[in-house]
Length: 242
Figure 1 (tube, rainbow, N blue to C red):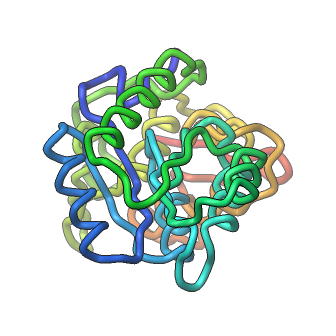
Figure 2: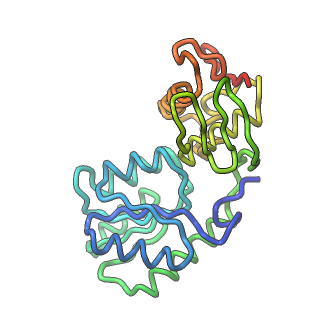
Figure 3: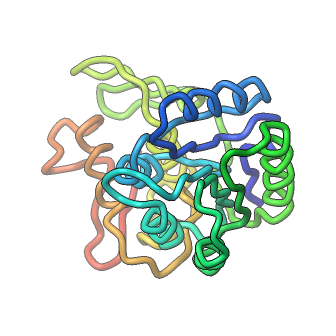
């Protein structure tokens, strides 16, 4: 059974999407002091990109954002993940806005200006309810190192030592690699990879998996155009050869 960040440890991973810098930093500070791991996106376009590349337990979202508005962000997030809780923080207090957000799958709505203690309490209650409902299968957490060609990767912290340099995998890259390591020489469809590594719904039309495979090949294949570890199986998915 999947364990969310809430279940595995006390802190949760929270994405705050807010273009007002002082408010964004204030939210980050107070949520961090409450024990959470917080990342900030300052516009809607950035929010969608960050969400695609990372795992989060909660999204705190303003509606009036530069580049892409909050409604579009909700729509894009829900295409990828129907279960991550979303809490709206907005100066819009009209009932029509709240109803529209709820129809798009928002879990809670708090009007600006808001009381900090009330916000923190709502966050904790949302995270608690979310932890009760987590059902997806995720790769078993594991530590230790693996060798891929001339590269060494620490599966516990994502640190990679490669001929071209040392770096740290993003959490989502590490999750995808864990799925492959736990399923060597087994054909995994894109739907399976989306479910196992992202927790996304099946049947999505997205290039997310392919884009991440390109990254892993670039990192760890001697010749990314002729991969030996992350191999495409035409019309079927991918297979990992240790």
